[in-house]
Image (cartoon, rainbow, N blue to C red):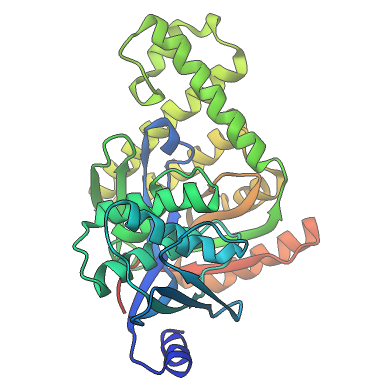
Length: 381
């Protein structure tokens, strides 16, 4: 893919490009905790977007989307949102760089990759981070990586219209080979933990469904969490998010809560604790406990946060009795998308085949599977 992108650039623009790679991500544990100022545990994976880019000595961006075989040209002196969906991810990054006081000169870019769209692997964050990294490098802007992450996130907010947390862009930029990164979504402090994957692989099972509840229920969950925080804040002025909340606090005031709101808050508090326990397990190289935390996370998402769906629950239940599977859970916003599974390398083919047959029989849908390895974040390719 890297060579194809590079050669396409050469033939379209008749010059040598700089090539940058930017990865998608998985999240091992810590779901729906990011917007509650909690902890997440993502990793960058070897599903990537490549950028071939070079200055063109004009005031225009000439872009070619390799996978879509579409081209577009934009005046960088008048950057604004476009009717072309894919272009907004690029334009949003340029706009953020300009707003931060950096001059972005004209450039040509070809980009494309192998991150499956709609599988919850953050292809949009990979595009935003890849372009930000490439422009920072080519024009020697000297922007620190964390600032690039924040710009990429704001690009998604302002030009793609998605009010995402910072995890996706952070994981894409700060990923480290063979490591997960524990990110504190309040302070943005982060710690790397080695994930002993010599004998295991990350297997993503894509349900191929997206129930239309996803976006409306996401907003409802945020509202429910905020309602719980407001109630607790009246008793504990130091509590401004569920991050500062403990289970004893919740138990003490359970009678004052709407039962549904209480369940939502309890899930987030418990999920933050699971991330902490999962990291402690990695420090001991205790992969069994790590896997159990994944299963517990899914149960919380299924019963307390209620963002799962029959397809996701079926895949986790099929994985649970298998000795070759350390842990499994739904990943992402919910109501469809993927489950993430830690599977023994020797059982990889048998596992994916068995799951495909079972899923086809139960739902009549072909299960897509992706095997992922953990890689470094955005870099020169």
